[in-house]
Amino acid sequence: MGQLTCHVVKDLMVAYLDGEISPETSQEINYHLKDCEHCRKLVNQLRLSPQVLGQMEQPGQGGAEEKMVLHQVRQRLLFLVVGGALLLSSAVGLIGFGLFKFFTDLGIPWFIKLGIGGGLLGLFVILAGLILERIKEQRSERDDLGKY
Amino acid sequence: MLQQKESPGKENLEEIYIKYVSAIKAYLLRLSGNPELAKDLTQEVFYRATRSLIAGKKIDYVSSWLFKIARNLYLDYVTRNRNQFDTAYDDQLLHPTEHWGEDPVLHYRQKELSQEIQNTLSKLPENQRTVLLLRDYHQLSYAEVATVMGLSISAVKSLLFRARLNFRHNFRD
Image 1 (cartoon, rainbow over the protein chains, first blue to last red):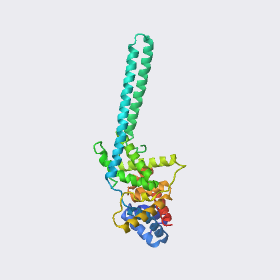
Image 2 (tube, helix red, strand yellow):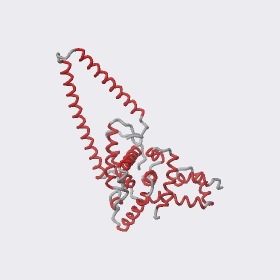
Image 3 (tube, each protein chain N blue to C red):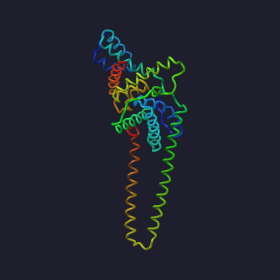
Image 4 (spheres, rainbow over the protein chains, first blue to last red):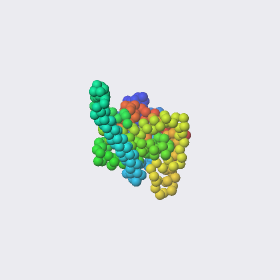
């Protein structure tokens, strides 16, 4: 046999070494390698890295050190969430209080209240639109692992 | 080990993550050659991963996703610190995951081998280092490596070809 050219064998070499091709193709490559010193040399050079890296100690799973890392992560997130919630509640409170005072103040003319009220409503509509868009995007992002 | 498909719900998130902490740390350690950096970035990886999940991101393959975050963080770090970036590493990094066992001869050999591997890796460009680590050390599938690196499967194979050849040429040179 030995029908394959060196060029094709070279293209298949990585998959051949990793056992990711059909037994038939693998057999063809074996035939080729028997006759071709150049490809044989190349294959042997490619064997080193999987062999050597595969010998290194594999990382452990779920030891004390790992738990510590996740514990620290949880703490950071907790601070973020608690801090964020506090900030948000105080902002909402302040704004709500301000608006209440503003709209119930009889000294401010009605058309100013109307203008500012309309502006705030517009702002709210724009924000709601943006949030809805973002939610839609996230749904379609299912297979897009490109961002973190 | 790293190839199973898992969709994390909130209740078992930690159980899933805990399986990958050491793997991510070992990857970052080998990639950067810097134990301190690897430690910091590992925490950052899981911080971001958890934050994204809380924000409602859907993940198909946890392992590829975590490796991808790790690699992006490393690349960001390198870009930010281009001027003072130093690939020097110390003796410590050569125990990526704790102990080597009791046998002193074995210990020495492993250490020596580990040092040689690190020397060789540090001579390769980042994408070749990553492809070798993910495939030959962490034993991710081609598809997973392709996802992590944002490449097609055939591009992964040809990168792997070049990387393995380059590794061979630099090893014990």
